[in-house]
Length: 134
Image (tube, rainbow, N blue to C red; front, side, top):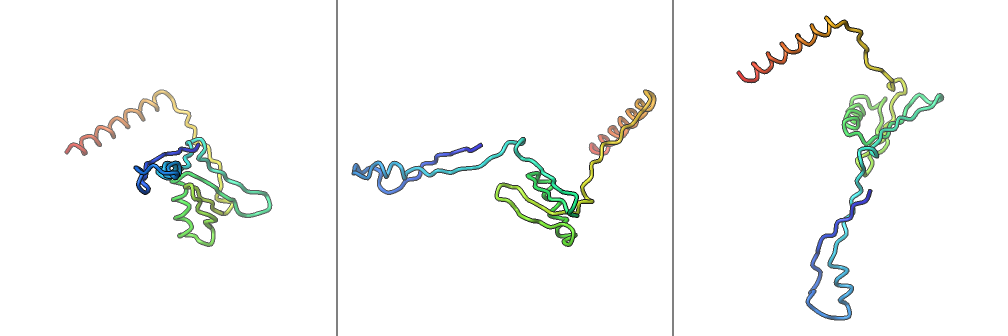
C-alpha cells in the first residue's frame, strides 16, 4: 500500500503571473512517499533445504530481528546478518538445527486440579495487589 502526502512548499515568488506559472504551481508541492505494510504483509519466512546446514530467515518481526541481531554479536560464527532491509526487514543465516516446531504442552487436568490452580492464581494476584499498594 502506498500513501502519498502532499505538503505545500513555497518556491520562488508565487504572486508573479508569468508563463512559468504552471511550473511554479507544480514545484510548490513536495511529494513524500511512504511505503507502509499491513500486519498481514509483514511476514517471516524461514527457508532451508536438505543439503545445506543453514537456514535463511527473512523477517519484518522487530522482536525476532532484535533477538537475531543479539545472536550475531554473541555467536558470530553461527548467526550471520545477510542484509538489513530498507523497510524494517532483515535477513539472517542460522544453523538449521536451531529451527524447531514445538507445540504447546497439553495438560489433561481434572476439574479439581483446575479449581486448585485457579485458587492459587487468585492468591498470587491478591498478594501482588497488596504489595503494589503498600
